[in-house]
Image (cartoon, rainbow, N blue to C red):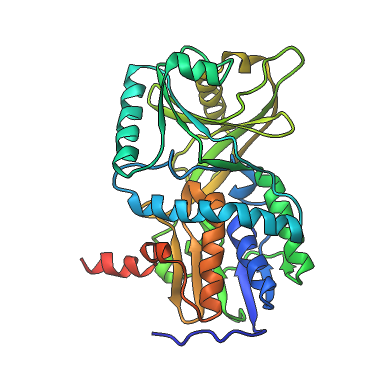
Length: 366
């Protein structure tokens, strides 16, 4: 077992300029560390810039992923203070408290919602079951959906405001940015935090086969004059077995996502992906076909082997903060807290224990 890092002014290198890397860098700099963020295109270059911004651990929950839910809820509890601190130190990240509607398009999709609702009730989580008519009353413009769930505790954040605010707050605290893509850690001053998303597996042998890219396409749309506005909630929907989400922004835009499939490091937007998203959204919100399509984009999420991220030491003075899959924005506060705790020689939050990279070695021994 390696020695603890002693608190002080030592250099910290954060590899990755997405939401996880920027959050770690900012929090470490607040405590007086000299921090360098290494990324070929920080802020705008990774999956975080293309995210929907849902902070929704309950509606992401599924049987068998209880550790993911606990970690997500621990981070969700931190989000209001995280946002206030960031606003004071950098800029307003656009945190919204409008909750989530989960909608089922047909009877088969309603079966999925029944399983989810039963799972949440068994865990003691609050989720109100809705008929199709009740869902339409909550969200005018929604089609004749079969059923729904209303989760009031979920939050959302404007991912682009968040990333910009984190970069500004970090810079004000002395964080330096080095535009480069590392091929190895040779000569990199430590401690080192690996937060390079889908590329992290290339930087350490313990993560080489544990982190993989998962391609996702998103669209941004804006209602034109005469169109109904998007619902005032984050809408997650199951449409003939396929998930989509619609996340409203304060400026009137709506983020529509997201496809997900294995495609290596391909980041091209495909006609198939755009068609699938628009067709799914039209089933739920018919008026969206009259919206202006203002952006199409694709990014690479960092997938892990078991839906949990890898947060913890992978070598002496080297910490992983990767593999967050769809939950990077949600888990940024708790991940940053854990890493900064290790850098300071303190104990991380209890919920982070399950995300330890040590489980990779344990599974290989089985």
